[in-house]
Image (cartoon, rainbow, N blue to C red; front, side, top):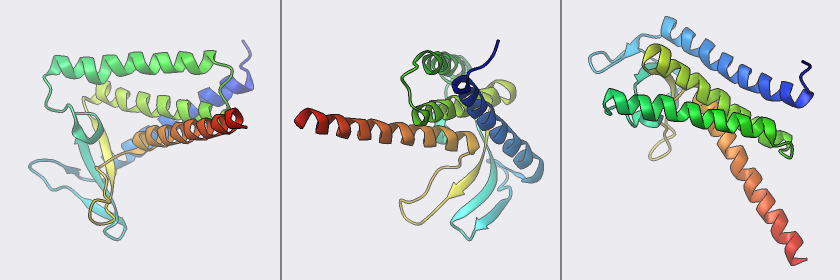
Length: 175
């Protein structure tokens, strides 16, 4: 079976996002001491106090949400549900031939980042997070990883595409 250039683009984007995430996590686990409730771990400066590198194990989802759930609920909400959603989005991306390249990249990035974090939850029981940005005051992040960057980037691209298309459609209907 020959892959179309479109299918190849989708597949490579997903594979690349998973690979970059997993390689970065392997490196962090091997080179940065773990932060925990009993250990402050290592914190390395990338750019002053603004961009930091650390090793944090996250049993929950975004910003640790769901980490206090019982095991059954955590499996349902952080493993099973995401697998179904990612599978549905993957099917949609391959089936909907009207999606432009930016949409394909956005959805493929979300799928790859999602798969990478679900993989960690299934294999390790937690997700390794390691980057932290603090620009002062409310301008700071939680601790995050490469998969989170792919998911967030994909979501931002989809928002811009939606806003651009809405604006474009408004202009054509008012003309």
